[in-house]
Length: 240
Image 1 (cartoon, rainbow, N blue to C red):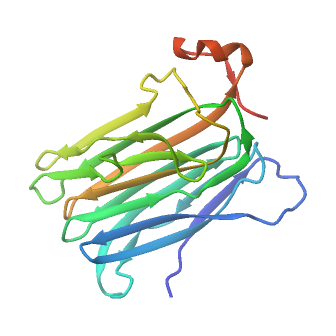
Image 2 (image 1 turned 135 degrees about the vertical axis):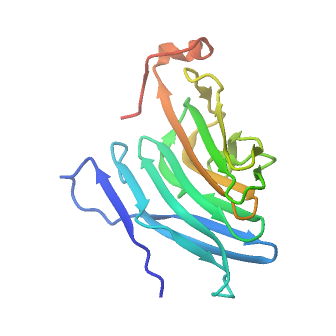
C-alpha cells in the first residue's frame, strides 16, 4: 500500500469553533501512449475567507500504470498548492518524463466560496523545461495549444497561458505568461464567481524534466476603481 506524506499548514482563525473539514484533491495524471496512471492527494479546504491552506508533498514519487504496477510512467519530483479563501489558487510542480514522451495533467482542488459579483481577477503561470539526455527537450500544451488554464464556476475559461517551450541541448528554457499581460492590471470577470481551479496539461519529451508555477486570484475592487481598470495600478481591497 502506498503511503503519501504531506504537510498541511492552516493559518488564521485558529480559535474559531471546530467545523467538519471539507476535503478537496489535487491530482497528477501521466500517460505514455495507451498506458496511464494517476495519483490523488487530499487537501483540507479553507473554511473562511481569511483562511490560507498551504500543502506540499514531503518527497517525490513515481506515477505507475493503473493496471501494470511495475510500469513507471513518470515521476512527481515536487508538488505543492496554496488555497486562500479570499479567494486564490496557486499550484507548483516539478515532474520528469518516462522513457517515451509523457503527457502530464496536474489539476488543483476546486476552491468554493460565497459568490462574488462585479469581481476582477488575474492569472499567471511559468514553466521551465530542462533537457536531461542531451538531445533537446520540449513541452507542448494540450489545453488549446496552451499548457495552463484558469477556470471558474465549473469549467468556464478565464485564461489560457504558456505556449510550447523548446529547450536547447543540455540546457533549460523558461516561459511565463499572464492575463492581463501587464502586472499592474486586472481583468473583469464575466459573471458572478463562486468557485475556481487551475490546471496544467502538456506533453513532455522523453527523459526530460519540467517545473512550473501558477496563481489565479479574484477580488472585488473598490467601487470608485471599477471605471479605471484599464489604467494601471489601483487601490483594491479583498472581500472580507
